Image (cartoon, rainbow, N blue to C red; front, side):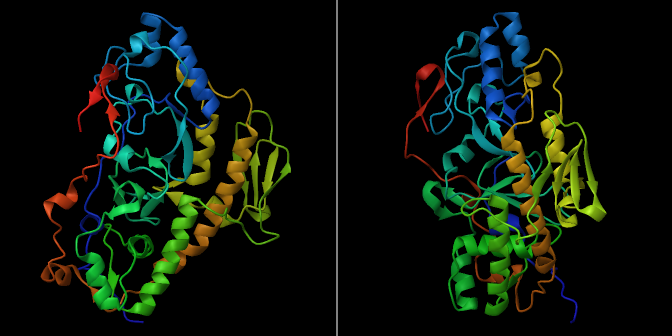
Length: 386
């Protein structure tokens, strides 16, 4: 097969023009792998008074006990200054804290240095957030999630600019142009699926006018999206290849080790198998996903800080999450080579899209859409003006 170059492939930044900088917590304790620890941390903060509360909070230039901020879109969290805050912890929400690591966050604007409200306004069950992986030269190049991403570095590109799956974040005219070249107008999710499957280093997305190749790439991309988002039917490996706990996990495992010839994952004396090599070897940004996931659950916070409030023993929920993560990584490891084998012919180049007036996208497409479907509460309970 002749080599195929993608020198004139359009960048994802032009195909999905609206992007937002990642949220910045400013302090680690409002996020954790389990929601019970977050509620205990909140209670410990509110029990403290004066300088003790301030020290526990870990103030920054952006947030302190006297900072006045509005409520996060969606109505989570309070608006009174934390120096006199009281009451129960806002119900924690799921977020993507690290690649393939879904954790929990206290959704309170007073705790987050840069929450990016524009992301919260469009976060719902229809939304898909796309971020560039830390190492843009090694697959996977893109990560997709239904959770609000808290990944540092890369900008976040929502698939939809408005709640309810409305107003796709695609260059105006792109869907029509693809429809004319492919013989069928694709859905916005199809374009994202193709991008996830076909993206190349530098975060460029070679597009094809070959309907057969397009359908194959979209199929691979939709499977990848399903595995990354983990919504709907839970993924399963074939019978006989599904991981199980073969020896009980200890109350507080401290070490993680992989025995390749036995396809076994050892958490101290605990044993999970079979664990395919593809799951153990799966890396993002040069770090093994399973090792990073385990480290987040066994790290010890500095004594006397809120981050030190953690589960006393390994929760059963973490074991279930581990088994599902192994399954997801194993299945993704099977899909990844097929995505790399997509040799994009009959290319729709960036030059073609510029000549058609699709690129560059207009400046308005790079800004958030106006979302006025609900009122938002400002500092100290005042009505926020959007």
